Image (cartoon, rainbow, N blue to C red; front, side, top):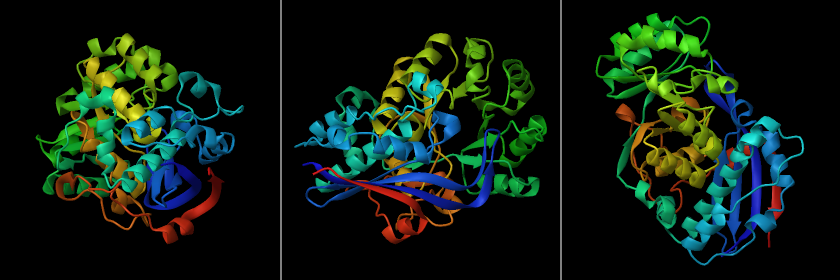
Length: 398
């Protein structure tokens, strides 16, 4: 089997409400959707959500990387089994742009979003063609089998972003009444009094709710220590990305100096980031996000490294993911063990219109079933895709 045609679409999907945090604010999501067609006519889909402040990528840079890569050379090989497909996927590499931001190139994370969409579309097409579930592909990555523990359902975490206090309070109460067990609270904005906010949220959600916070690079090392002490009475499970990546060295050995666990996000985009974080003691948790880290295989690699190093990991998401990437996250979370926190599948709660026909958003208390195949177990509505497409490119690989 081999690929005969690839298409890439730049899509803009409006959000139901504006999402604001310390690093960025957006009212629509810009994504890249990839369509992969095999020689037997089977079509698979992939998605990535490039963010310039995370990996240096934009929708324009992703499309440029595709245009400047010999896709026939990268993806033109044929395969006869999912084992051979796994080997092909592990070799996916895109040409580097001459104008790519060097800071991200040197880290090794520029191109991760571009890789993610290609890899996912190929795995989806191949598993559809063989009538396997997307999750079945994980079994063909021999080096990561110790990470696998399939289950029938997963449970997503709630999230409280910056919003009007009354609405935020109502949402916190709703999370408690509907049975959520975990909640992440966005902090770090100048107008937020974190102590007052966490005191309110703890009261509204109850003492049994697992609370963690995300500063989105807004603090310094000194402010982190101050906030960790100040917020200790509210039993915070972790503090995510407290300092800008440019100041990440200030977190050296922080895991042995404050009691609240630290999670890296913007500073955890690739293997080199993870390797340095482990050796320098920057964190206790990795926040793994499929688009940010380059797709299924690189994300498994980082989870495996965390496991070997005694660190924990969560599976996060990018704001504005459509149902394609939500489905990939569901397959990952229902197949990989020891995911400490799970974020994603906000589809109907956040998107004005989804690109898939199925409803796979999390339900009561964050519960959601594992998805069956073939492939991702979802169908893309191509009329909606065209409605939200701003630019498209096509390649024949035959």
